[in-house]
Length: 351
Image (cartoon, rainbow, N blue to C red; front, side):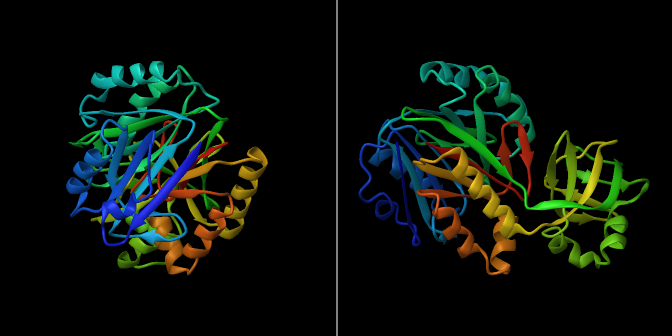
């Protein structure tokens, strides 16, 4: 198989797809002002080619922040694209679409991946999609786009998740998740006073969440929203840690980008040696895949900001490019199988 990537910093879709012929699947990453136009134009240029799209920055060896980027898969791929609607209310109503697509491409654990672009309500959506994928042990990577909109096959949807199933006819596929944080000290908290709808943590160990965070890290209230780049919360899930970013201060409470429930056990995280973590991830991929056709990744917006502020983003993209054809999306939340995580990188590697 082959992965095609091109971008236009000025948002010219025809410039971005110049030279692309006979794609089996297209992923569109556009900007808020031109998304509708790009979706329509893409369908006109490649009618009946499965496609999904969202609003968001994209990259290969460089980033486009407000233009348009296109990833296409061709030469040895079988694919399907569709959408589950009403993700905030009843996404399971549309699950037969996914089940039908899984059957039609004969999806299997070894050679198939699901990539999703979501408009929000990630946790509910992932639980629903996982009910279908788990029967075939198909992995998933994905992320949340901006603007509350996604596209599938030339149509725009709100309150929905667009998904693409990709079967690699020439080898295996595997999903990865990268965490650049580690536990800080022995801090452990029991969450209470939570608001599931607004993702709010009211108290930690019976004390106001905002004050607990400030007292430990010696930061002002104004500094909390940037401090979360270095010190997010983590929720322990077996041997894994799900990262929880702080979105805003709400009185004495903290609003997050991921739902926290009463009695959840949280830890405080700190930034690890991210250069070493990235190096180790690349080495693991090389070991698992001596031959690689492509890598598609989703990097969190907070990782992008952290890496950019530390002058590492370009170096990071160059390192990932040593794996071969690498492209991806800057997301507002990352998906890994049935997990909704923050401040992470998820990716799929194709043999």
